[in-house]
Amino acid sequence: MGDVFDFDEDDLVSNFKKKVAMDSSSVNDHPEPQEPDDGEGVKFFKKYESNSVVSVGPIGKRLGTSYKVEIDEFYEAESRSNSAAGVDNVHKLPRMIYSSLHKTKPKIQDFEQLKVLGKGSYGKVLLVKHKQSGKLYAQKQLQKASMIVNAKNYEQTLTERTILQKVTHPNIVKLYYALQDFDKVYLFLEYLDGGELFHYLREERILSEKVACYYVAELILALRHLHTNAGVIYRDLKPENCMLNDCGHLVLTDFGLSKASRECNSMFGTAEYMAPEVIRAEGYDSQCDWWSLGAVTFDMLTGTPPFTGNNHKKIMDKILRQKVKYPFYLSLDAKDLLRRLLNKNPIKRLNCDTDFEKVKAHRFFRYIDWNDIITQNDEKLPPPIIPIITDPEEAENFDEEFTSMAITPPSSPIGDSLFETIEESRSTSTSSFIPIQRPDPDNRNDLKKSVYFTGFSYTNESLL
Image (cartoon, rainbow, N blue to C red; front, side, top):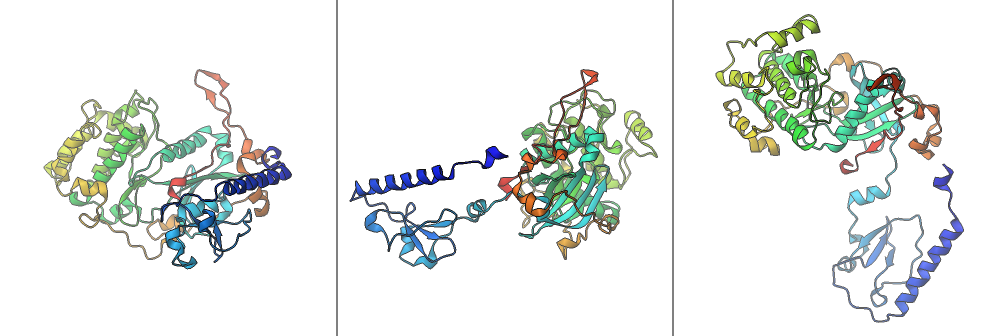
């Protein structure tokens, strides 16, 4: 770390004094500067949280005496048009700029863990609160030790971080931070306090077509954005990954099985919602997501996926060999859309990417205006389900099986004070440099170059 912090302080001060002397000489050589336009540019500076004014304009326009500028003090810009009204009316810098001046690298100790929101094979998802700002996040965490045993866990977490890093859409969950300590890696995601859409489905058993078409439309927008704008195949569309925000809009989550590619040939997904070509592990593309959309839509309208069984093999066999049986109470419009989506031949399957105009005109969506869905115009077309949220910190719309779980506090071999002074990527802890060996696909007897935890961290500046 020495190369980061070592510098010649005397040389820095000397250069600063030379620069000040040159600026003073330049002013003396031009005693009558041109009059700048009123109201444009920066003429004065106001010391942050102070009534002292620092003049930086031409000599003829300066106010008061000179002021010593300390190197560690912040200043706010004031235009000449504001100066006449007095220093109390100084125009402040935009908050984004001001916050960037104070920006420090976030760390795990900055967040307070409140409740468990979910648990899976990957680890836990916790509700956490930033101690300073009070903002709530969903913190997805994974043990580094599990990644050493199973490199796929790391690859899936890294895939999710990489995809969410480049994707921005109102119907796709936002990633704010990717952090790590000496035991775990963490993804800090948008907290969707409306809970799972199918939390409401379990209560209602089925959704009406008028309600279902709204959320199917939002799913189509999210998947189309992934396919056409990010080149991502989602591959894991299922009820558990469809969440609601506090306004009731559907937001797609969990990108661990997604693939930033135009074509895949590996079998990934959840059995009940997997397309036939994925089960056969053939070369497949984004068309597999439209089959999954059909299966999720079928689930919304009937309460179960189109194919069920007591084990994954039976379910997959049915998907490959059996025809879909549609309940009598489904409308002709719903059956028509489902038949187009649940076509076992991906070439003949409805493609919502290329046939979007045809999809929008389908009578199943007769209850909605697509422009209002795209712009989320809640005044003209509000979401059909508005979550009841009395206290966001209570996670009221999440399963009590998880929210009642005890939280294991984060552990770290060093204290907070030392943690603040050490860059994560330059940490001397060996746990940050543990190699993860992966079999080389070209030669199974060899191991590919190790994957390290360095470079995992990320901060989404655009969302701060």
